[in-house]
Length: 76
Image 1 (tube, rainbow, N blue to C red):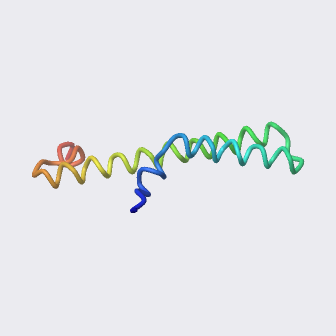
Image 2 (cartoon, rainbow, N blue to C red):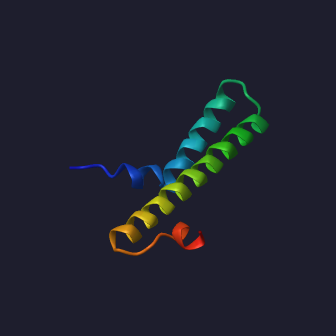
């Protein structure tokens, strides 16, 4: 059974779970809720960027595979 790592790493559920886990650890080990919120927000922002990059890469790869142009090629 092969694991689709691209799909897993772009999953919003995964990143929300990671952010929640990290936030909980911060509070447990004496951090403030403000620190926890900032770090969780940073994790989710980073996940959004990663998801966008993977999504655009897959779209471009599909366009090239099908003989079309990627969106980036059309803008140049």
